Image (cartoon, rainbow, N blue to C red; front, side, top):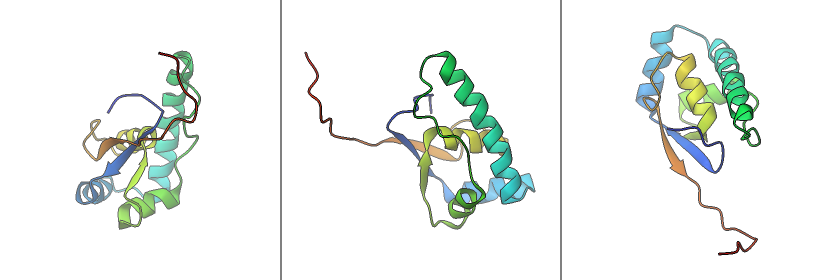
Length: 110
């Protein structure tokens, strides 16, 4: 999973995500707080590269709970990266990226 911040979502591997939560021994709120800190670091790096637009601002306790229970199965790619870092996992261990195809409304010159 690379830094793109546009049109990318990540699908959670539910059994691995649950195992990582149990292994971390943190509450959903603690995970969300740590992931939000990581997301701010990512946003800062994206702004330095002039790609700061489209970066989510935070990770909520509700999102962590929905991912852990299976009610949600995907999230923004950068949120997924922040969650992996907060849980002490390597990039790509818990989430797999997917491209969301969006039709363009404006024609681009060749």
